[in-house]
Image (cartoon, rainbow, N blue to C red; front, side):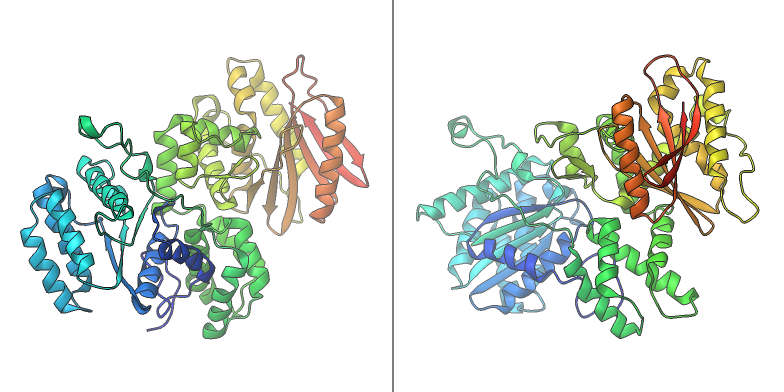
Length: 522
């Protein structure tokens, strides 16, 4: 079977091009060797299933270990209706995993399952299983979110915890290590305990070790995948450089890395006369990706729709340059990190540039269809020069005119709060399929938002910022000139949102450090 890039299920080395995650696996294996219980709590399509597959493979190929991998996905809700159903079914899941590799063990587990009636019986069966082999038994359970809101699952965790603690005291035998995988951190679940046990425990998983392995793919981990692909397919590409650009757009989110590679291989390469991947190909692929629908993107947008406080937080960070620190006790922050929308650094940021673009497009679309805007953006003026370039000075002047006409009306408050989104919505019909805008968050004293615009073969940089006074303005111009220099551009464009008092509505060309900047005030 010919190898391919995959974005569903586990990546299997024999069938798929995959990144080198050996360093991550080594870190996790060290936790297993130490007998840790933990959960790999990461967003969806983050490589959790692949990691469990590889860990199981490595453990069963090594001396002294017996690993069982299973999943709570697809077993149905009725399993969690009672202990009488759940407890024997757990052993049946283990039997199903080994039925081909070890039929005798599968028969043993099936026979045991018939005798299990409740959690106490399951506990004894686990002890008997552990005593039956000199090997250390490791349990790996995927998709624990499917049952994490179920009291029976919480009780199951509590039983495993009790056995773990009793084993430390020498009064019981149990699994050497337990690895769970899911989006949520089940340490936050609460167990309904008997009154006499309430003071001893308050969480069924408070024995778990924090999982701190970075699951994002780093450039050096992506390079071997690209090198193998280039060799197998006979495609020309600069693997280290391309890996850096993939990381630039995705921040190493595994699904996005694989998805972009899959699109380049299956959609773009067949249409090219030369078998080569270029940076321009990747840029076009990114723009196509953010316009398409997929389960990952649908989930992201649904989370923004379903959690208004999260949407407000993300909007503020992206559009207004709000500087927000990570605080685990802030529910909106927790949700953003848990869903993979935000990542924690010195300050919170949208996880990657693909997501940032996707979310920008989502907010722009909502602005386009808002009552305050829809009646005023129905047509786009002709602002294209004879050589096919965009008349950016004309674009800014038209936007200034639009804002001035609407500012005195009842929509003033809306325009002040959402002026940046209105500008992006204003741009969309002007670009009209011949170009696109890509946003780069450049946070500074003036709360800037840099919009990189491509139109036909031309490229422009428009900076949107809030007025923060003359001194901050001069500093901002110097930063803009420096950014233009790094982008090899001679001209830049500046939209200043001035909410300080009486509006001037002025515009002017400025020369800053040898660069020309056209600025408007709105």
